[in-house]
Length: 118
Image (cartoon, rainbow, N blue to C red; front, top):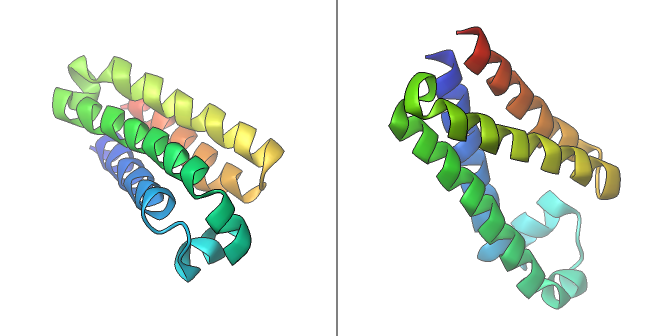
């Protein structure tokens, strides 16, 4: 139950990131969230949309795991996608902003722990 709730919250977060990166990248809200200027956002709009699509795939994988049942058939996909998110968070923290570690990696690791401890 706790693992499922955490997985659902992380999936929702990645859907939100998808929306920010794919559709709102040049808006003040997205520029604030990612610390970019209007010029940078405009110049990187296509790259951000690509990143957003990948975040959507992560969310879709977690949703698939929830539908399959995180303690049953969905355990393998939940584990895989949570590990992908944790690793992406570590990379993002090392290359872009340490804040990503707390937004992506820590929640994914907590959800993994809950998945295996329940």
